[in-house]
Image (cartoon, rainbow, N blue to C red; front, top):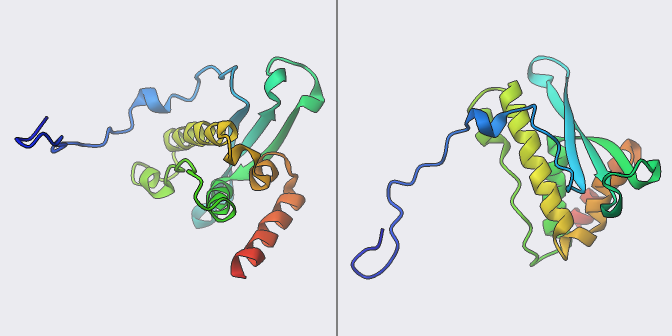
Length: 167
């Protein structure tokens, strides 16, 4: 709606609630994606409960290839996605890094329910693919460590980045 001076007015805007279509967990996999976020697994109980996701990375030329060297698979927590977001801002000042969906916004709907976990998984998958396709961010060593480094190597990268940030 336009006001008298020609400015758009967005009064009445309400964020779209999470619908069943948005959180359906049995959707077919996207064949054209370079990175898939799959297989959420919950660990622990109570307040120490957390979820990990399998992050499967395929080289763009081998989406349908059976070549085992063309793909890697790692498990990452949502906090690892948050680390990557912060690290990209540190490593690439001035780069436009896509926004990572917020954890708290999802928590209001239901505490780590299957719907929320499925919603978070899909949002993380879309987000990580936007990073991979980004002309500047897609070349980031932090991104490729997130996608391909084993658990020990990734933990080392994260520890090293904390020391660099303190400087």
